[in-house]
Image (cartoon, rainbow, N blue to C red; front, side, top):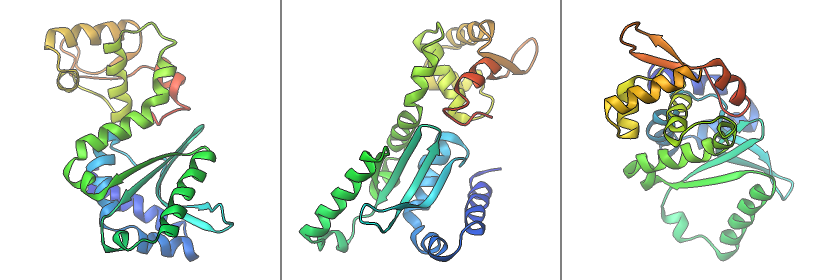
Length: 227
């Protein structure tokens, strides 16, 4: 399915599992800025919404409740994504409110969260840069997992592309991603197949797509979502 269908399914699933204040916050807190983040930043980066939670409730450091725009939660990974609009309320914020906002963010970090904040203008005008930041944050642990294999930098990048996409990749996609010639890419893909890192997905004499090998899936399945 495309973005619209997946987005509706994603939101409906969260609406159905919530009630009370958690449901109200999702209905009122998830607006244009958050939807634009999903459409222009998250979806092009991963093509799925697994392990992503909108308007995620956490315990506040003042014994109350706080809601994060988005929380990405996996074993050993907790990332908070916030999309901040620029409006009159920011101009009128008090010194106490400004300090409280910083204290809340510091508390998240001390509790083990990685906090990434984007402005609405960044999401709207520079989505590709935002995608790169999200991919780097989510994929940071991936580098450590891949280091146990004897791979070149280019080979690791091909695997990262396959993991972020979540489905088969084509040689042309790799060419565009690495900005390498078709001859170089063909050699890279062949090497990864020989190392059992990739498996031909379609085509026989001329392979049209590749998927992750089971060895790679097993190694990093506890770090990121793998199809």
